[in-house]
Amino acid sequence: MLSDYLAHDAIGLATLVRTREASARELLDIAIARAEAANPAINAIVLKDYDAARQRASRSDAARTPGDGPFAGVPYLIKDLGAPVAGLRMSMGSRHYRHFVPTEDAPVVALARAAGLNIFAKTSTSELGQMPYTEPELFGPCRNPWSLDHTPGGSSGGAGAAVAAGIVPLAHASDGGGSIRIPASCCGLFGLKPSRGRVPGLYAPSAGELGVDHAVSRSVRDSALLLDFMTGHTQHQAVGAPGTFLGALSEPCAPLAIAYVTDPMLAPTLSADARAALDDAAQLAASLGHHVEPVTLGIDFEAVRHAFLMLCSVTTRDMVLNAERITGRKPSRDEFEIATWAMAQIGRKLGERALPAALEEQRRITVKLTDLLSRYDVILCATLASAPIKIGEMQPTQSERMQMRAVTAMPIEPLLRKMLAEAADKAFAWAGCTEVFNLSGQPAMSVPLYWNARGLPVGVQFAAREGGEATLLRLAAQLEAARPWFSRRPPLMPARF
Image (cartoon, rainbow, N blue to C red):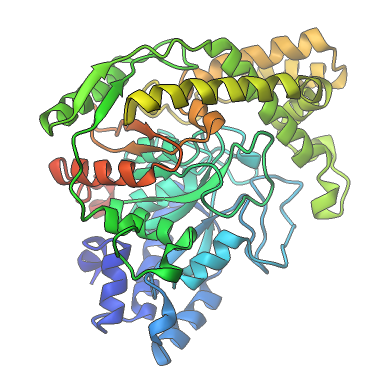
């Protein structure tokens, strides 16, 4: 049954349950067994709810009804950030929040349950989703199944690692600056960030409404069907009907005008791996009949970078300095990682004043990209500036930690600005290609078409007009058919798990 489990995506597993070729309990037991085997190596799961999930699966097998949802019986994982599950701790990778237990499900959690997904554990994230890698001090680093020395990305790194390791075919993720697309790129998965407002909101909305919930998956069709359910399409239309996102995959992908962008965005440059992945994707798209045209965005990326950082700093300030509103306890400096505490101080001292200008820059970049996408159907660009980095590579050095402690103890504005610039340079050198589409609110996806010479995945990013998810999904399905990735698995999986 193990090989059969890995051979199916979530829709395929739900079909097995519906036709009684497998039970929900059997699928859950396999998922739990895989989690128990893989997690000591990848550290993707930070909270288990196995017994409750087993009870749900057994009840579902005993009394299944047609209303169980399109994913009935499929095991599922929820990211431990921004999507509360009633009765389960939501630590958000933070020592302060580690005992916080929400009393209500988030809308995306309630919708996942209604779709039939069986939540049995929660996945790791960077503290408060701050970093594009997943190495929270609270739980330790999450590792990439393709190479345990490398990051699975972040902040939805636990979700990406768990899906890549074959624990589940589909897992919840969220994206406020690339946190769906970055793990998808690092882990050889498909990751779609929907348009702003498509999916019911995050637990803690970000300044500028940067964040959105969805998933990382092994197949395009799983992502499409889940989006149908999250956006209410399945309430009024049959699964896969014309006009649904899943239905769009049955339609031919008409030739698209693709703007091919090699700008490094907020990164200083693109690596040879990133350029090779982009060139490969451009050639593949052209071979499929699309018109691919090189384009330079002509964007003031320094202004975009500053706006994004200011918006993030205000959100971090709210989650850190105003944490008592959520947990009922006053926050203290020693309950947060020093980089998170420093970002909160930046939000307090700089972000609030800079907020109007940051929102105006957000408006400008949205207009700029909207204009470009009135002339092109899709933008093709890098997801990351390079292949997955090694664990610990972006962690603050001891000297940087000392500087952060000193500056936050005496938050003088010039020193705060210098500290922020240095930290941002380090982060954006690798993960500076996704944030622009969070600012603009347009849908964007990372597609796994390329693996480098070391066997590490390097995704490429496509973006479309606001509300253009169907265009992206049709293109993704065409690319998936032309360059299948579903059967590509990390080499450690068959041997060790």
